[in-house]
Length: 180
Image (cartoon, rainbow, N blue to C red; front, side, top):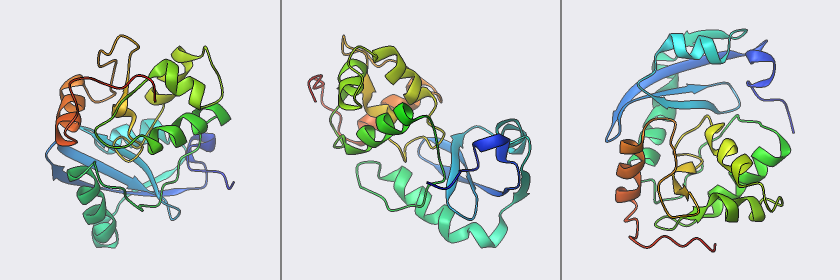
């Protein structure tokens, strides 16, 4: 696997960014030549500089228009699979959790404990929750589909109100499946 922009604070990378409106509010999309490295809400260029202190950060302009359009479409319809290029990297466990999150069908949920089992580390529910929190491409890797073992929402980097809106958009069921 080639290193992502996250390695060494983005050293040697040029990261272009743009903003767009979605049903979740103002979204920032940032991408390297490999793919989207950050998708966030209520963030500006200074947030990117904090995430990638060694990268060259530049406005994306028209060059990013198609990528932003496709990203807005993916956020507006989180229940549909997307084929957007991603430039993310984490620990082996984080990447395993992110793969498993991507396999959870829209409208279904999984507990952090069950997610840990699926990612190969039974008993690592807290670590699975932390891996969800380390996800830097919200919605595209659907960490909003993970819940606590008691069925409650757990957390979401951009607020539980946004998580609830995503789940509602996906026709979230009132009875989460914790056994996935």
